[in-house]
Length: 106
Image 1 (cartoon, rainbow, N blue to C red):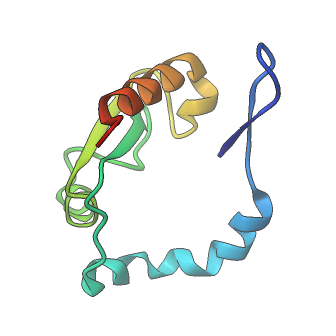
Image 2 (image 1 turned 60 degrees about the vertical axis):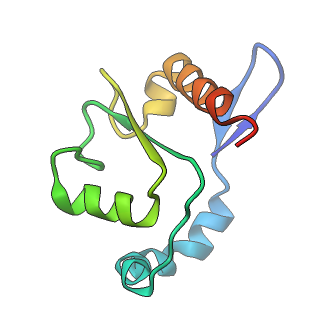
């Protein structure tokens, strides 16, 4: 997702061409775990409290995140679903800004 617009008129814009081009690679995700691919830098997983896509109580979900992103931070925006950036844009921007401030200089 990218921000598009100008101050006071921002909106989220998807790069649909890249998403379409990458669809066939999404099924390869489980193979990443087996291949030992790891990103050790700081990473933010922002989830909506009403979304089941990332389930903090699900060992399979958490194992995948912990294995691939050992320096992750998982944050929940309550009252949002899977499209938390669209449903709670102010909360999403504040959460993301805090994360970026925290990792500045890392």
